[in-house]
Image 1 (cartoon, helix red, strand yellow):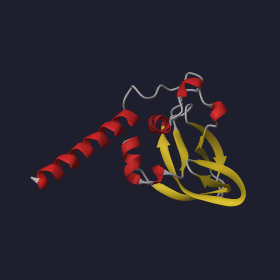
Image 2 (image 1 turned 90 degrees about the vertical axis):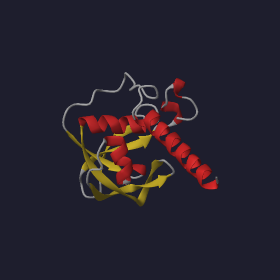
Image 3 (image 1 turned 180 degrees about the horizontal axis):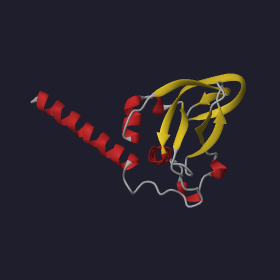
Length: 149
């Protein structure tokens, strides 16, 4: 009986996790791209990732593939929680992933572009220009974004 209960708890947890992943990454109910954001043009994009997107399984869930990631360094910043803060003399280790327009759109959805984050062009220590997701300040967030965004 205990084993059956444990299996039920594990399955329930997995179903809740899958539901949360669907709701946050694929569902049409939790994110509408703000109208003020420019459309994404076809092409290839380089994105510097420094948080959860450094993990291949997360990229696979978000973009539909893990892709290759090249180690990279962003100088002049430090990581503070979910964001980067300018900090002369400091650096943030991360990775650069190459994505197409559809994958960039999925990354924007995951990061809640225009609601939680903005995508900023930034030069890395090696000279490459990449997109970096930076947390929007409270004053930049839409009024209807709520306290949890």
